[in-house]
Image (cartoon, rainbow, N blue to C red; front, side):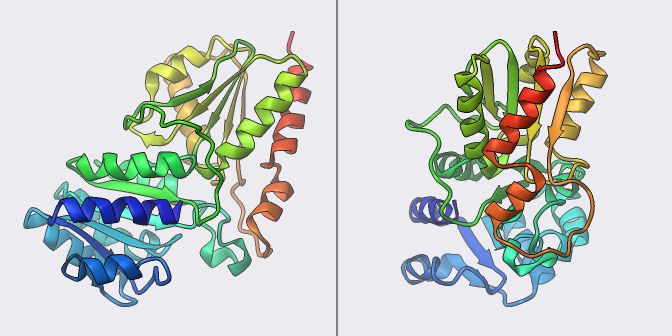
Length: 308
């Protein structure tokens, strides 16, 4: 995802001199070509994330389109007040890019676990929250937020995520991408966990379960219409590498509650809400908390067996 973001942003910068990339002393080994080709549109502010948001806000006030980039929690939690007061209060055209969502940097410990960011950024007034499901969606999302006129948060995995889409889907901010159509259950995914969800759907289909799979790449504004249609399924399952509070499952549940739909059961698969001091790779964490394909499959099958 990271590499596709940089490649796409480089193309956008080449076409539009108003687009800037600002980093907090990170991204080396992937930024070199962009730095050398467009030195006047690249700014390294050093390890100073709060200042990074201030610089980006100033550029946006002058009509520029700044993308700020850092790892996991650094561009969010270290400078949340600046995001709230500088960007959101003035509704500035700043794009905040976080690489290393969920447990992408799991081996570096809890300080690098990006598992509360969706909840935090969903709460920011006027902020769009985008979490693409694979490198293809990342490319399309980068182009889309560059064209959007307000603050956006782009939540990316690290690198090496496999492409799920064989051809480019129609990508529109606020509209889910439907990967499979089915009548029995609806699997709703956000972020780079999409590959595991698609694998789980194939296992379910081998058992004769008709599966509807959606990539909910936009958490805010979320696809209200799709969620309303999902209630026709026997079961709704949300899957996210994020806290159980304030993420995809919460957003879907809010809509179901607001529409008064309580007849369709929902399973919310996520990272829970406790702090973990364990260290391990992303795949190890996913298996441990039940977010790998096999675990998703087993959880859904067990729940389906109790639904008539």
